[in-house]
Length: 160
Length: 406
Image 1 (cartoon, rainbow over the protein chains, first blue to last red):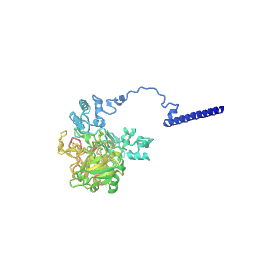
Image 2: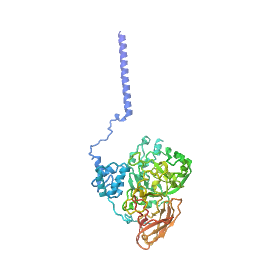
Image 3: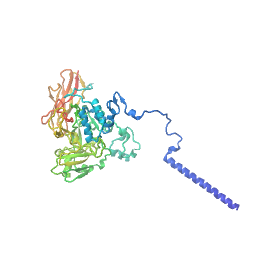
Image 4: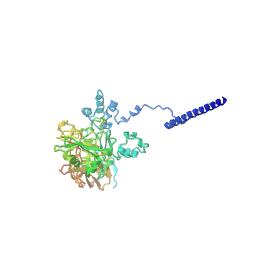
């Protein structure tokens, strides 16, 4: 009887050792898999360096910064209606195309109609008046005559 | 290997060079992904352009040369102007590129791969002058709408390809063919896939000229992406907009091609002369064909100061669309007197011609050297602006440089 009890005890202890080692193998395996997926899980070091919280102004403030009367992001002149122009007129083409051109009200409107007819420009609604007003105020035609004088000459000594 | 393929496939040239660093995991970049470094790029490095080139517009990209960088007899790629109507296509693969010939006046629609074009037809190289129809627009008064080109939307590179006429012969065209129109892979600015940014063409007579090429090389190299890689139609001497880039289809038409920028007022001038600022009806506008006589002084750069008693060597190029240049003259007294320059024959038809001379100035002071070319028909460049037109095309007024003698 005691022999049988003894045997049973031994079996039980072997069984529990087996269970424990099986669980340990499982655990080690699981940890291994976790390590493979993301090694940083086992790192004591923080991934991010120590940092202070700094107040950064919202992105938009910087995006629409104006310096010396020029909207830096687009190069357009600051003026009434600037942001309406930026938001409606610089989606397809750059603002450089606007800045290069000089037109009166009739021809700016004509240009808008052409873009609406052929270039997928949307109906500008009440914004059209704001945009055209901005354009004729800031980019009106200037008279050049039949031939302008040469300007912006960079003088340099020519040594041959 | 895959990274090499990627670089090749997108033809972005040396990505590492563009970004100034090596691209780690280059092979893992998805094919359609544009690197952040390329989204707000420096156009000079992206398009391999010299820093002296001038950007007129970043969307679409438009860039012109200044006169003195055009001094080379054959314009190097880094000095060739860029004129885009839409967005430069992404993900172009020359290996799978093909071009289809269709339209009312082909006997049967036919498609060639780029490799077939190259292997089936003889190759030809010509030096061809390409000038934007709007070159010089900035001088018109009242101002004309569009990119305000000054003098630098012109260049004369070597183009290598197959003759369009050889290919059209193989395709088979009907007797009623009057025009060809190209279609290309560039994207409309609005990104609307149903819209073409530009689809122009030329009359069948121009299409059948020996020098009209389906080109795959520019100055001996594969055509750079921004200049139309892998296949460009090149029609020397005509508005450069007829030399379609990234072309994948040519329609042979029994009417004047009516693609984008063939209609309305685009690349048209009043059939009869009009007063500056005058309104012109659409039916009174005529399509620009051969470009007018013109010249550029490419040496020295404007602003040269020379000592009294020293002569000044000048040189430059002259061109006249379909015609040859017969004479180039210069004036140092605002057109009161003219003297002739030495002029070379063109290396081939539709190539610009080189002129040079040596000038003695009678006394100290401020001078302007003006150059004036004359074409084979005896037509010369005007000293003032030529006839005003609503879109500001064809300004061929004399080029001027400033000189100080002291």
